[in-house]
Image 1 (cartoon, rainbow, N blue to C red):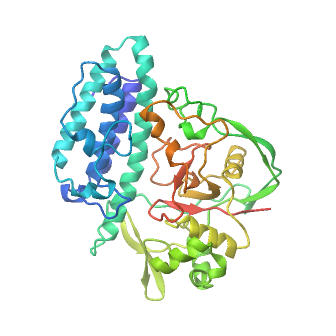
Image 2: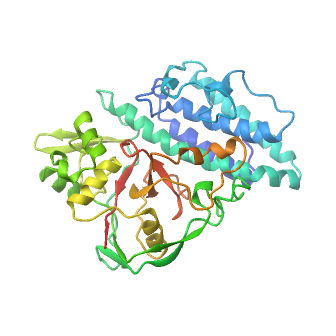
Image 3: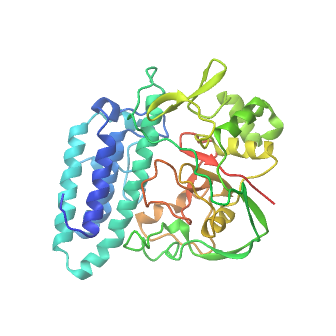
Length: 407
């Protein structure tokens, strides 16, 4: 790894953090795929390397030769314009390359990228920098996914092993200075979205301070009616009350697809909760422990969040309400991603960047719901008020909770 303090240093820091996250895991841990939506740790380490190899080295270093034949197929996620790829549900069947070889792959690509940037003149560096920053942001997303996926893998092991003694877990929010449970806002004509996103002419600014994904723009105005939004996310104690009142047994609270999911999958509590006599325990990255009523509830689907809001006589905020509130004083805990009532759709005037990079976000703008905020597993500095996370409405393995809103 090169040590220059600049974009190279940021690249080195993020790459090192991925390796630090993988360090507690044995090779056997790193090859497990516990469900089709999850990926093995080894695959995350290799795929993020493939991203730099393909889009930075492959696009800007004419003399670069790929590290190994076939890696472009094994570690391509969903970029159709790049070429064929190994099926997502079968990533756990890739025993070769080994975990050790993936480590060598990472090191080789790191060296080649450092050499490229060290030799680039200012004009060439200016062309590389936005793609490099996109790759860094992309790897930060996979750092969160790595923790989500290994938690799921360990949860299906009867031994319920801990990832780390101090594994990240949502903490109770700090009381706000005002102490008010709700923030009342007038709404009106407000500006939402990031000024750097959605233009379709570039992959994004070259610095972390100005970076935005394409789906965060274009910046535009929306009308908001007056609304209220809760000052803290829904807690485990709130959720226990919902459960005690028959929340998972009352179809009138649920959207039709949500009620079908409850019946088909036997939901009776958030994911990772286990009965413990008359109470509940929760499996965390640090192992199994008692549910803390003060903590934000986490690992609930959009369907569950919507049902809880109905039970509480409230609703979920729209993503624009959430963003507007966040810009003018909403206490964002950063402990759980928060479901909104908004479907994941393009903003007015959205144009994806040309080429394969344009497949990063735009082609998923169907059948998903937007989450806002950030979670205890989100890398520091990675989230912002305009950040649009998205998952299918039935997903539960994300670190997702909710915050209520109302008129």
